[in-house]
Length: 243
Image 1 (spheres, one colour):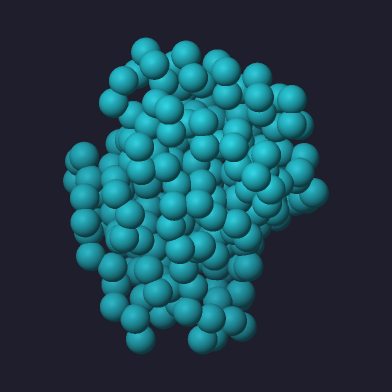
Image 2 (cartoon, rainbow, N blue to C red):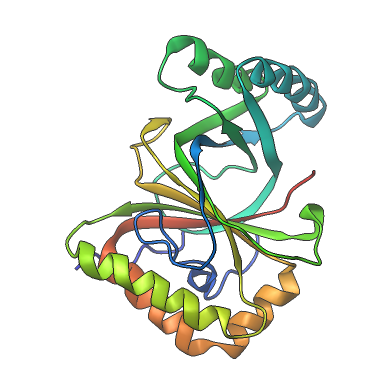
């Protein structure tokens, strides 16, 4: 049984952050139609010169648009819990594309332009599954986003597939639960050993997340057991969006 990754860094305390998500591309549960057929690209990096980065971002969006891509959310990474053996990023951008970018040199060159204004770039891409999130009172800028990057051990795929839907149903019956945006089944990576997936979700705000963790220790325990049983390593990033 793999050991639970230790907390390596974080801007603030992230006690019980594992309660934020157990959803997976291979085992995502929930109701409603899922949207597939597009590709997701999650890129994270460290920015030191924000004015230079902002200028680059405008150019990047134009280049992405020319290749059938658009930026979904972009903003600061405020900390993380776990360890996938990469340097701590402080910014991210999540992109949706009609076709993959990282499979050819021309597409990769668009993404690698970020290095002109950032260091420690990691890019993770693959088929994107989007989930209906229903009505939300929060704007994107006020939400508390969570990104979970995972390597699976693949020892018990049947249990790995069946347990997340059960946990999701239980969580959905409680106040202040998370909302899943979608998941990327990673097929190509830059800057790290390719993980299995990136899961994207949000709470309507940080206070909602705190209430959920405080009031649902049984769900925290169950998610922690899932992670210990099925993951080699993982990390949760907590972030917000500037758009």
